[in-house]
View 1 (tube, helix red, strand yellow):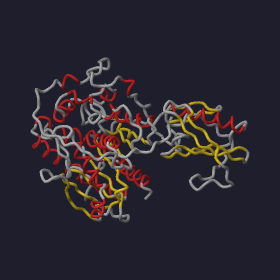
View 2: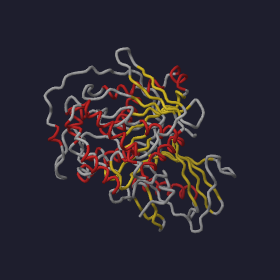
View 3: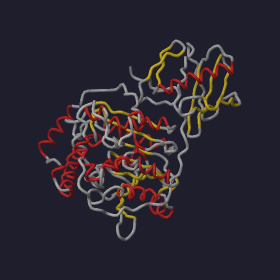
View 4: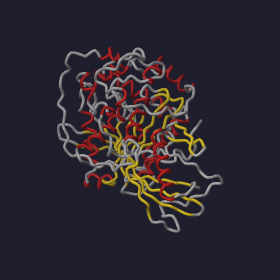
Length: 496
């Protein structure tokens, strides 16, 4: 059964699949925790008001907590509520009742039968903590004898996870969304064409592989037609004289300066992507979000091992937060967000963790598109989508070998953000996953961890789609829908 359009009554999410009977009525929640908290909330309202039933209940969340209003027989009861991460009631306070609801709380319509509300609200969002300044620069180093990365590929579901990974209970997977579909035939045909036309990138040198990746990108861009125009496009750079990190800046067609700015980190397994392979995507995001997009040309593997790319990305966000830079770019240094796909989604998540730990700069939000969040995890999607969907499990050991110096680094949360022990205080997130992506489960697990840490999060799984499906938007509508969702999420984040 699909979730109702209004989503979970506590948090509004539609990405989970938990139904529970409340007051004799089957009610949708995004997760069991929200259901549990919703029931506790209703019980507390009943205890405070002594009302036999409730005509309507509305809860609005923000980064500081949740406020709400309950109605019965024309009477109104307003409240503030907060829960612990375990779902217990931490605080409940009655608020003054006004004749008209406050501006941020539209009046409730009283339904015909009393609305049965369940008590399992999602944890309240938390204020994002600002990140720090210091950035560590990684010196290049030679590879030690190659570790047996290939031995880490899960061959069956009974295999034990490598020692580097936390036990499964440390990062529980979220409920599987109810939406699924057959693998899209047009994308299947395109992937078969690519497999028969282009060589295996892992068999080439990095430079040769990058040329092929750009060629493949031009082909998929060709299905779209002319690249969308932006009002201004310029390339600049930052960093010490020894290495300048290139940044391509896209100013949207609509909106007014100073614009919010999104630091975009391209995908490509830390090896293949560049500013050109993601040019049209950045144009689309800029126009749809009405934000400036700054695409960061971070240093790539294997020439530059971990953590060079991560530190370049963090330095880019710090640079975009400087007043002098913002004045040149026409952006607002107080409204900086991050986004990225695949390996770039990994670094967007990691940069948020670094910003929190280093006390700045402040990041307003994060969009993670089919992100890598774990190091060689044993998940269902790794097995289900191991082969035949473009991005294959066999590619991962090669990719990690290019990026990391040794397998031990896979424990580091800067490599696998799902390994971070604490995710509270991170900025709001939009996490996009695809049904036929081997990274699907780890992306959704990270969304679940954010949710459990009281971070406002929206997670959307696109049915019938593989990894990198936005690149195939010239063939399928879902790619455009994802771009629309990203643009809408950023406009809402920045209230544009």
